[in-house]
Amino acid sequence: MVCGPAFGVEPDIICLAKGIASGFPLGAVAARRDLMKRWGPVSRGTAYGGNPISCAAALAVLEVIREENLLENARAQGAYMLEALRQLQAESPIVGDVRGVGLMIAVEFVRPGSKEPNPEAVRRVLQRALEDGLLLYPCGHWTQTIRLIPPLTINREQVEEGLEIFRRAVLAAGENP
Image 1 (cartoon, rainbow, N blue to C red):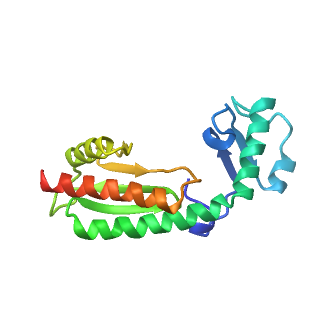
Image 2 (cartoon, rainbow, N blue to C red):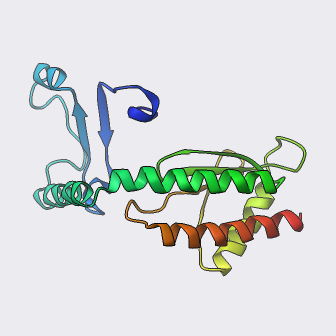
C-alpha cells in the first residue's frame, strides 16, 4: 500500500499483519474513528486477531517503536541508504533503478545500456553478497530486483557495513556479465 505522510495520502482503512506482533500471529484492521463507529462488532476481523498473547506482543512492539524512536531511525537510515545506492547506480551500468521509502528499498538490475531486466546479475549479486555475509531477497516479475529491508533497529554502522558488501557484490557482478 502506498500511503502515509511520504505520499501525502491519509488512508481510510489499513490492514496490518506479520511484524505487528514480532512473530506472534496477529492481524489488525485500523480505520478512522468515525468509520469504526459505523461498523458493528463482528463486521471486522482477521484470522489472527484477538489472541491475548499476540495482542500483548503487539503492544510491546508499539512501545519499543515509540521509546526507541524507530520511525525516525527508519527515515534517517533509509534516506542515507537511498543516497548511497543512487551513487552506486551512477557507478554501475547494471543498476537500472533505486527506489523506496524508509527502510524498504528496491534496487532493480538491467542489462547495460538498456532497460531490459537482468535476473542473471541479481543471481551474481545475491551469491557474492551471501559469500561476504549479507543475506538479500530477490523479487520482481523477472527476479530482476533486490529488496533491502533491514530491521527498524538498524544503526548507521550496520547500514554502512551492509552497503559496502552490497556495493562490492554489484560492482563484481557488473564486471562479469
